[in-house]
Length: 366
Image (cartoon, rainbow, N blue to C red; front, side, top):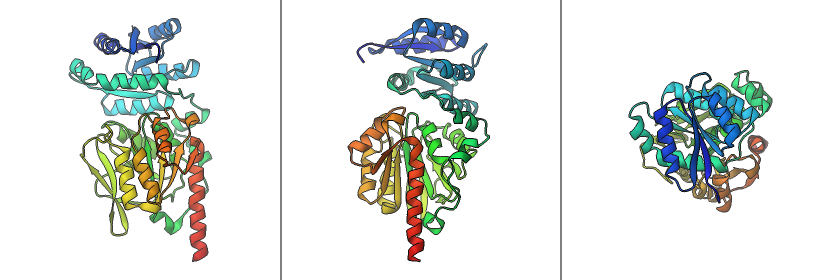
């Protein structure tokens, strides 16, 4: 960028404000233009200074970070990076923040704050850079229905129940995503009918957060959504999410697909990595696979998605207009991995239509 990224830090801890300001100001391409100890001070600072990005704590006096984020995204949508504690409660709140429109989050340690935040410095500034160029999502009205647990949006999206019958045991749907992916994955999964083929998912996320992510999706979808467990059989009507901080791929055991979750090294700097999952799909599933690449920064999974296509899979890639960040989809397209490039809201419908066509052909042959 030709000018520096202007950041406001919002946190009730003076130590955290100082540390984050220091980390930001060490970068040549960004500057901390202000810090606030609560959202009411931050609101005036944002009006006055017009930052490019804010970092936002969750638990603060006078108004918590989630209430503030909700108001901010309604009245003045802008890129926000959440700074969340690495706890179960922190994970649940972080999922809510991403639903409200936060671009990304950093999981700050509960102890050893000074050394812990400095260890996370590279991650923090990377996420600020991504947020500065991200398309801020203006939450549509239907998200409120989902957040309320009414299921109205899921039901409105949902196709008719009967889908595949026996064909669903052969097919496998593979999804990869990063920045902006939690909401994009939800958009796809809520549209999938109860007897969908099995779905395997890698979303870049640290340990401790995928449990809350899976639980939230499970409450919204017709299919069962869970974290993948090493060695379990991958079943139709289920979606399996790579646990944060692990690698996840699929293997075959006789006629069944099986989840493999292990402590493999980072790939493309990521753990879990989309590359690992997609490579296994190319090798094990072949023409029975469907690939879906959603919003995210970088190129993780692009080369492996091309391997899937070469092995006979049919692949969908999210279009630029609906991505928070178009990096991973752009790279997949550049690798020649895409069969169709579609707006996010159309991907599940296109997939279901294609699967129904395969079912009809199978029934015709029978």
